[in-house]
Amino acid sequence: MNIAEKILAAASDRDFVKPGDIVEAKIDMAMVNEITGPLAIQAFKDIGAPKVWDREKIVMVLDHQVPADSVKSAELHRIMRDFAKEQEIPFLYDVGFGGICHQVMVEKGHVRPGELIVGADSHTCTYGALGAFATGIGSTEMAAVFATGKIWLKVPSTIKVNLTGRFKKFVTPKDLILYLIGKIGADGATYKAVEFTGPAVTLMSIGGRMTLCNMTVEMGAKTGIISPDETTFAYVESRTNKSFMVIGSDSDADYERKMEVKIDELEPQIACPHSVDNVKSVKEVEGREVDQAFIGSCTNGRIEDLELAAQFLKGRRIRKGVRLIVIPASQEVYLQALQWGLLETFIQAGAYVCSPTCGPCFGGHMGLLTDGEVCISTSNRNFAGRMGSPKAEIYLASPATVAASAVAGKIVDPRDFLEAKP
Amino acid sequence: MKVSGTATVFGDNVNTDAIIPGKYLTSLDPLELAKHAMEGLDKDFAKRAEKGVIVIAGRNFGCGSSREQAPIALKYAGVKCIIAESFARIFYRNAINIGLPVLECQGISRKVEEGDMIDVDLEKGKVINMSKNQILFGTKLPSFILQILKDGGLIKHLRKRMGRENDV
Image 1 (tube, rainbow over the protein chains, first blue to last red):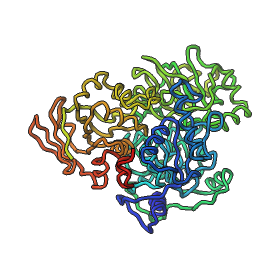
Image 2 (tube, rainbow over the protein chains, first blue to last red; image 1 turned 90 degrees about the horizontal axis):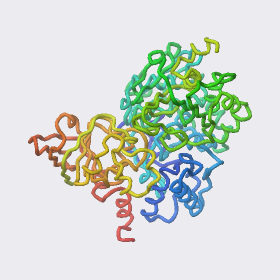
Image 3 (spheres, rainbow over the protein chains, first blue to last red; image 1 turned 135 degrees about the horizontal axis):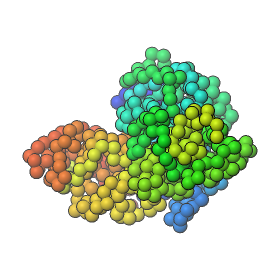
Image 4 (cartoon, rainbow over the protein chains, first blue to last red; image 1 turned 45 degrees about the vertical axis):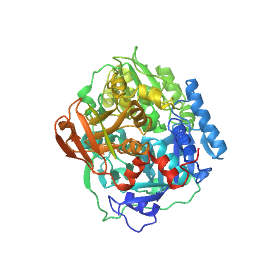
């Protein structure tokens, strides 16, 4: 069996499962945010169960609209707090104590290898970076999980993507996942798991692995996953004392499809409006003028992303007429960026730095777009209307490409940009 | 379980931001969400759907976020059933869980035009285009999923299983 199959077999007390089997599986952790949580809480109350199945296995995060940007948001936040209090749920990450839910789940040690995790957010698949089987569900389904601790799942078939080589300078895991989405298509992995293997994965940081797994949902996948290794163990052990199972793919595991990518041949990639699989090399769209640049989100708001962006912004100013919005993914990342001097670099370059939130990525707040505006973003979706007006255009790229483009005022290849002295 | 209505036709990759834009997600009121259903693609949708429509679509319907507000907005706008070439998985589960019938049916987007009268038999996975006298068969839902739909969604289904259906 491969890792996805093994985790689902273990979670459903079976020795063996195969793609297509429907299993009733026990949940190790369940996560809600304030957009999906209140509906889940309402549905949980409708079920009529007095207590959640396990208060220590539920994580609640306020992240999409924090601090409350409207009275309605404040009300949703209160519903979350009241429920945590009533059910004595210890893991509520309130304003100032967490950040974007997926970053918080990983940072705070709530994700361990071999676990089955559900989250009421589509980017829950991010946790596959640590060797967990993690998938997004809706609010009503989450209510049933709150009540029973179980869920039915169809065992997915798996696409194996073997990665070899080393990235060229300023080419990143974001460029790789955009490239793969372009190849596989926005629905090419629907209902499937995508497993990343190979020496290039071994060399990749946890943050880079998170970026890869995070965007597998953009090709429809149920989860993205990576067998845990020494890098995983070192990270997880630094974050939690909880024990975990080491589950990895068998060498003779079955896959529906196998792909090979030599990453040393990869160029910076960009997803063009209005579809995540409309992927080109940055070179092909160079010169497109931008109104706004956004660095942040669960895809690319980690410290290594900010550090990469800062290399392009240090000692420079962004182009007049361009707005650059930088949002660290969590309080921890925010503090680290402060201590490392990155925030100073951003502010001196003319960036507007916000506190951790999903913000403009999902069109909530902190930098929406109006008709005809063009935004280059490190986030994960460029659907029409995603960041505000349906008549705005969103390009998705790496933190290097976005930072370089903010300085140039137009889309540029980050490698050419650093070669040309300001 | 049978449903019928007038067809309203969409293309491939209809995403959750188009079905219900992020800015409306602070509302918990299904009728308020319904007013903005499909706003990203078609401003007149909510008005048209009032009389009861069947949404016909291409591939990957409902791709994007896990927001359950998407199928809720469609259901309360008047959508009786969605028939698509394929669905994004979270949307598919959400629709069933809130009691909105969904059916995968290969070829449907080429066989139905705006305004056609459609009859659907969910048990058989059968779609009849009354306006064109054509019959198509989609992927039949497993019986336990059909039961969730018959009970009116996952919550009512669970209440029934727990013997609580008569509680307030």
